[in-house]
Amino acid sequence: MTDFTTRILNNVATVLVGKDDVTRLALAAILAGGHVLLEDAPGTGKTMLARALAVSLGLSYRRVQFTPDLLPSDVTGVSVYRDGRFEFVPGPIFTGLLLADEINRATPKTQSALLEAMGEGQVTESGVTHRLTQPFVVVATQNPIEHEGTYRLPEAQLDRFVVKLSVGYPTVQQEAEMLARLQQRHPIETLQPVATPQELLSAQAQVRSIRVDPDLQAYVAQLSASSRQHPQVALGGGPRASLALQSVAQALAFLQGRSFVTPGDLKRAAPAVLTHRLSLTTEARLTGVRPEAVVAAVLQDLPVPVEASAPELR
Image (cartoon, rainbow, N blue to C red; front, side):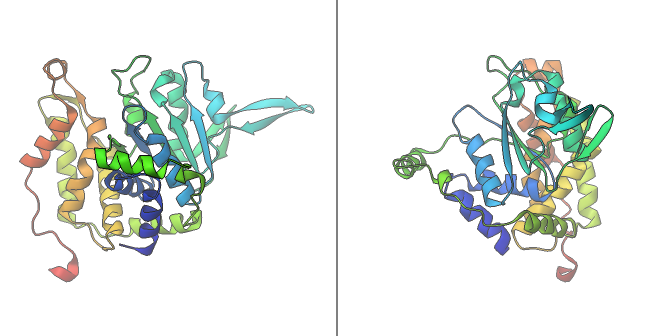
């Protein structure tokens, strides 16, 4: 594991107990240059994970609480008339890491305000384009759609998130340790940066240079195609899903200190990358089929290119 990733993971672990796996995948998504969607019940540590990552990476941090009355301009910014001319007042999206808290409680119109920023790193207001600073990361949280007062995220919005993760409840032992840590004060209050935005940009460039064997690239394309062709799927992973799967696998290889991607990296990344991109058929939903089960079946049925490896290992 690289020194950069060790510093980040160890720092976040001082705040979140027993969440190493989800932290690693969230960091991999950020290293891949993508955005993270955290879906889980309230109180499981979604917001704390976002704050801990922002502090650890030295990123500026803004939080927006998404509510039904939130307007798109409340997120992106608005032009106001001052001293005889219109002046753009940037919204909270102009930051290093934006926490879009409970994103599925806002209307689809406000949810879509993030699309341009997430896809192109810019905001257009009154016909004028404003570039966002880099690095720029959106970490959105949402409650399960079965909860009251939630709106389903549009497919185009979901596709902009590189991964969707679940923090999960801690074990009894982990929860007891958490209580001991938080008895006096929360560790997030004293958490300090252990990296800089420039280091993150450098790490993202290194991730893009991680080698992906052509056989593995064909495997990635087959995974996405199989998700589209599955009989219980109405809408599966597209080319953006394939790009996300490759980049997250590269980031996982980087986290392990390797210069090449293995089939294991792809299989580990696939559930987080593909699950939220699947829209099941009506029949599948009515019979209780879950997207996670479809992705697991695709991974099991598709042969892995066992000969793919780093050039130096051939």
